[in-house]
Length: 172
Image (tube, rainbow, N blue to C red; front, side, top):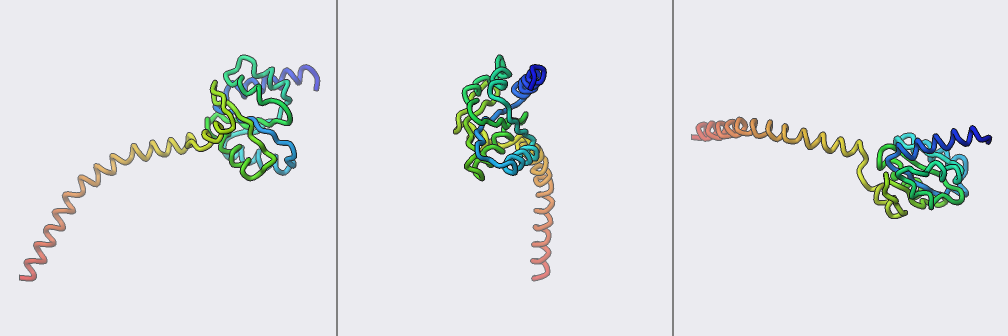
């Protein structure tokens, strides 16, 4: 890899570190190519991405970035899982580590906040952006359905009262 390619890679990594909501660092020693392809596919489906880069170049790209704290994790065979969604990459990494013991999560960063192994696990348990939007949409729709039910309730109450009176009249 010549100097121009290295500079381009450092720029790409810098963009990743700048724009990602969360970055998870893990060791992947012993994973097969099929395992890595599986991880990449799961990440892609969740809106995340996986990147293997030289630690030295990644450390250069981290300089001055909000998630510079992950530089301590960059040693050995490391892989970066990242996403703009602050939860997607953590969920993918956590799920994959449960399936595969050779994928060992070291930690990560969520913006300027450094995450240890337990922090990544906690972030992975948070609802994703889409889940939060669905919850908010449901909450916004609930008052309207409650109002419609309340407005319709007196009419159904009157109807049941009238049917009760009618039944009593027929019985008498």
